[in-house]
Length: 114
Image (tube, rainbow, N blue to C red; front, top):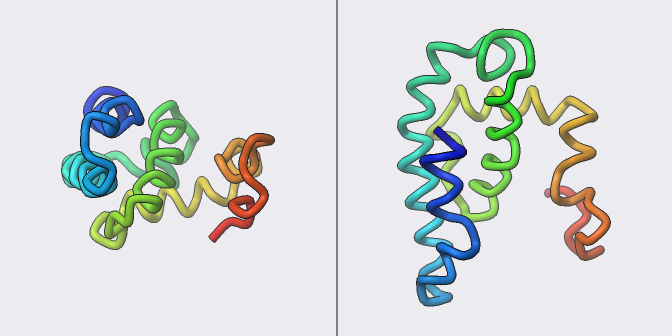
């Protein structure tokens, strides 16, 4: 759902089709619409993570998408299961080490996680 229905519709080349002042609004709309559907699915499949109690490919997509949702000011409290799974994933060193704010090309002023 994320790889095909959310991420491609809000990636940088797609957002570039919109005026700069409308890009975040577009991303927020796409992510919110996608999370509306995803929340219903994950609410049924989640254990500790998206699908049960083991990390799966679903979590590999969810983690960075949630960060993007935060960037575009999506109201993440509307998605309690997605938020809870993200918070569990955010406790895992492999995920936090791979997060955007820990990448070598991340500007120093952005490296402090909010």
